[in-house]
Image 1 (cartoon, rainbow, N blue to C red):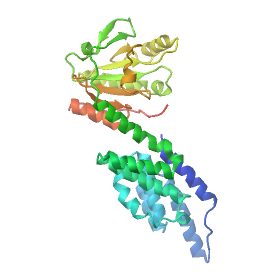
Image 2: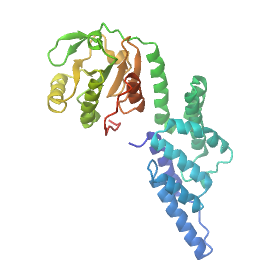
Image 3: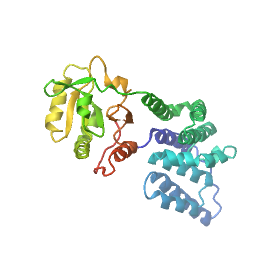
Length: 325
């Protein structure tokens, strides 16, 4: 799924194209050159996030597409790839164009404020790469102020930082008991952890469309983790009346091959609340000491890196996990 920020920016891109700069055509040569640029430009934006983008970028340069547009396209390509580190590395280059940016030459940004917001966004990510929380807050706040329409894209970075800070101070109480979804028996997290490298808590709900779509990937993941002595505890969250029945249907029919314990979150001391679970699904990796090693979406590359750190022989199974709801 394309980044929300990309979608918001491309919305501005459409607005910018509604009033294109007039073309002055003096000859057949100029006409052909104009057609070549138009074709190169269309291909450039059509290949964002794809392997063909590098070729499209080269062709756009040859077609004499304006350098500012090339810079915009490179930025959007990184957004589509979700490569925050590369965006952070690009921040100085973006900042160099702060004063020279011209909306009349832009194919993406109708307003200069939107462009300035992107500069601060890049600087905010660069600050995160350096663990400079003060500069991150300064630049992301400025980005909000300049382009509030993109707030939904900036917000997740703030939430992620707040989550990481909160998890650093938590030691999960391993003496907490959870009830089995299958037979109602109680067992502590420590019992599930006994003799293991770590445990994975998988927070889920049968009403989630993403859960249902990606169940085959979940099953394979549990099997791989089981082989690496890292058990998965599938923790059912939610309170609606028939949730247990719905969850049992999924467990028996669609996830029968899963190698995991099927548990129910406590009604009194919700693990989902303690671990600040906002989205379904969420994976949380817990060390034998109760330390939080990862808290986030199962498609996050950091999830797999954390597992490889626990078990160097761990190999990520083939997966089609797609984040969405």
